[in-house]
Image (cartoon, rainbow, N blue to C red):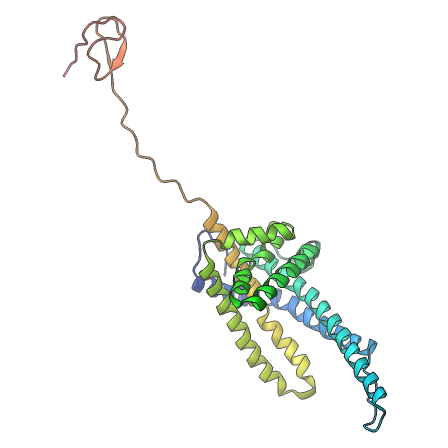
Length: 293
């Protein structure tokens, strides 16, 4: 199935339909980056667990100071492991999301796709992606804490920062204004699209979580595999929406101009000078112009 860059603004149904068509057609190109990201993140979590093992729990009859020491040690190690795991996972998933955006863009542009080349492109833009993620994350979090609606508005406003960075190769701060420019005038549409996409991902996550729990000790491995199935949906949808907004920006074909009737001319029979059709006297010799029926 052939894909091409949208030449007009797409509605939400068209974006979702093309998202799944694109995903299923190029399944492995979208799935592999997230599968690898999940495997690397899981391995890193295991390494962090070995680096910072939990202290041995004291007996219930141990002195209070020993139990407090254990409690503070456990909390400190827990905070360190969570921080390192979340930070690493965020960086790896940022790369995977950027790769999915690039693959979707290259497909729509009918360019050849090489995942190693895609990784190099995204890696070059990684600092901008991370800076943008930090800025938008802080702003959205503040908006949600202060009042939910401002947080939602900011999430809508900055929803196209990743495509702007990966495709247009703008920097972090330029991507913020570029995303705001693209979604301008389409706030409700953007909200509707993001709401549907996130609902799909959440429902899929709940289903996959229930399935993975059946496998007992292997549940984390199966869960990582299944989670990678739903992960590409958001970057593909936002890439299609990005190009849809680009098409909206393009000026339409100019309306055909109405031809203006040309003013006729008439020649003076005495001196040959060209005069306007409604002229009574020749502008050169001054004689009355004789008009022929």
